[in-house]
Every structure is written in C-alpha cells, then in structure tokens.
Length: 177
Length: 241
Image 1 (cartoon, rainbow over the protein chains, first blue to last red):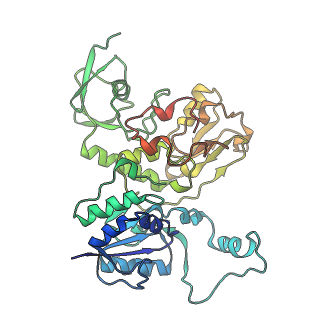
Image 2 (image 1 turned 135 degrees about the vertical axis):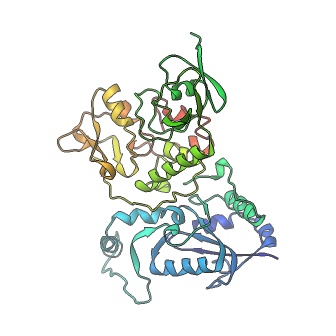
Image 3 (image 1 turned 60 degrees about the vertical axis):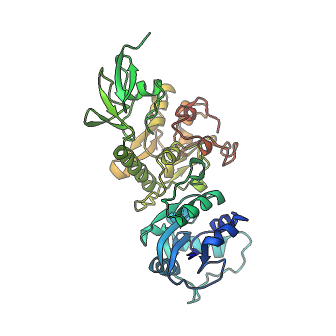
C-alpha cells in the first residue's frame, strides 16, 4: 500500500516545495511508493489521515496554527522541512521589529507606495507579534534543515523514511543555508 | 624534541610535552575535539564547554586541563557528544542565528560544529533577543545577534593588537559584547580592519565590510568539509572569506 503524504507551506516562501519538485524524474519513482493528500501539488484543501506530513515555514499567524494542528492530528509522522519551520528563518527577522511598525513600513512607507492602507478584512488571519518555529506549537518527529534542503536531501530523507529507516543525511546534504 | 610523556585519548596514545593542555596535544596529534572559544594562538578561555572531555572519570575542559602522563581521557562518547549538541543548540536559541541571512554562513564555526554534531534542530525555545548592530565603523561591522561571547575578539584586541577595543559587559543572560569608547561605538575606537580582532570571530558577529560574498554560498569551507577534517583552516591569518 502506498504511503499517504501531505505537505503545506506556512510562513515560508514555497522554496522548499520548489526543491521538492526539483527531484525531477525521481518524482515518478516517489509516486510509486507515495500518494499525496493535502498539498499545493494536489490542491486538496484539508488532509485526511496520513502517514507523513511535511511542513514548510514557521508560524506567523492564527491560520498557520490551525493548519499545523490539522497536520499534527492527521499525520503519524510530522516533518519540519527547511530553516523557517525549524528556526523561524527569514520571517523571524521581524521578531524584533514592532508589528505595527512592520505594517507601516510595508503598507504606508514602502518605496513606490501611494495612499497605502493596512488590510483589515475579517477573513485575513490574525498576525502574531513574533514568528515561531513549528516545534514550539506542536510535537515534531523529524527535522530536515536547509534553505531550502536540496532535492537530494529531500529524496534521501523521504526514501529513508518510506523504507522505515531513521533518516540520515550525508555531510554535504546537511546545511542551514 | 621528542615528546616523552603520553596519555590516551579514546584509547589512542597521544604524546605531549610538559605543560601542554589536552587540547594542544590532541591537535598536534591530529585528533579533533569540538570547540568554539579555543584558538591555538590565544590563552585558553574555557567558557564554551564544548571541549569537555572525561578525564579519568571527571569532566573537564580539554582546553584548560593540562595533560598528565598516563592519563586516560575520553572524548568521542555518545554522552559527551549529546552534551555538546545540547550546548550548541542553546547557543543557537540564545542569539539570533538565522543562517540563510548571514554572510558568514558556510564559513561559520558555530554552524560547522553544529554540522559536525549532526544538529538537525535547535530544539529549545528560541529567545529571539533584541540585540543591536554597530555599523558605525567604515570597514568593520558588529552584529551582536550572532555573538556567542567566546571573547576571541577581546583576547585578540588585547593580546595581539594591543588596543583593548572589546569587552564583555553585563551579567548572565544580559552579557553582551561592548566596545571600549566613550560613545560605545566602534567608529570611535582605533580599531582597524587589519587588526587580528577583525578576523578572529568564529561566527558572523564581527565582519569585514564588503567581503561577505566574495566566495558564494555553497562553495565555502564547511559546505564541503567537516570541521574535524580542517580544524585549523578557518583560523588562518588573514582569513579572506
């Protein structure tokens, strides 16, 4: 039976997902052993019970928490993929800037902006004052670092996991940048 | 001169001269013991504790403990490496070490030690402390978010440059790198970009300006070499990264 895999991107840049796609023709080999549930690849909006959940990005707003909890609830194994999920990453650079100042800069004073306004539609998720790595919100089983992790690292990690091994990255596959 | 005394390190016989530390003797014998605040050119500091080894049943820093004849030392044990990993994780969460945004990435010893210890996550809750940057000097940048308080710049400026530009101020978690000028700014000291203190930082806390990306990310020292293979390579003077 194929392994069910769900993926999502929270406060990330989708770079890790691009790197996942970068495993190129090996995706066909991967699809022989896994089937994707909720993922930007399938466009399924909510995940059902899964074997592996892969989360890119940290937690920067209330919606991120809902998605992350949905993943934790449904996935037997939850993986933090990439620097943002593991440390907060680039979005966490705003952690020492006041949130209001951030909004002012982005929507009012940014270069080329005229008559800017700060979006306040009730459908927009509530932003947090700080960005957090996902292991500060739910329990995480495995960490796959990199910004992004290379296609080779993702491939090695997923095939180890699918084969029931403890994932082990070679020296050059383990990097934080 | 032949070294006549020996001790064992993980079962391997290491020769040493009277007065040498465990770290010095191990390095001379080509055996790597993880470390951050130790640097062969400077007086031992013994603060990072990464080089903690088991010396005949007691734990001690390899950089400050002298070797003794017949001594039995263990370093590469699972327990010691787990402690080293935890210490490294604590260094990561205590500052703001965001590798993808750091120009030192790939040449950073903190990162290299973490790679060596196979640290996959900083694990502990991040502090995200508020720390400031001093960009006042025309050629040297201080990025306190990345400082691990190893005091190598303090030692280099005091003992080699003879300028005493740096110090550590505050206590405990409030400890921080300070600059010895009335304004507290680096621009108001006699620091020069050719000073040893400008080159010695193991992380990206003290950087020479306009050199950050001379070597692209992905082609740097620790991108391809475990720090254990090249323990001295990051320390050569002058380092041009």
